[in-house]
Length: 119
Image (cartoon, rainbow, N blue to C red):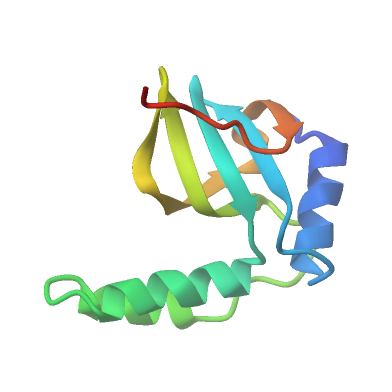
């Protein structure tokens, strides 16, 4: 999308304002389908920092994610947690992951997350 969808920006702004961290969303970006729940950027950054801190080989990167999130202007990114990339009938990773997606790169979206089946 050359110009971000204003409605999607409004959804992201509501999540950022702390009014909701339970918003399920599915987006298409770069031909990839990502489904999961949105989190405020600060919460997302904290969780990524914790995961990196616990890693022997990546702990030095954890500090990057503890820096303050940008506050001026409307949100520019969606911050997914407990998210999966859908590929066929499988969600990757099975346990859910942490994804940051540029709102400008979202070509399609829908409220809610898609379930998948590995049967």
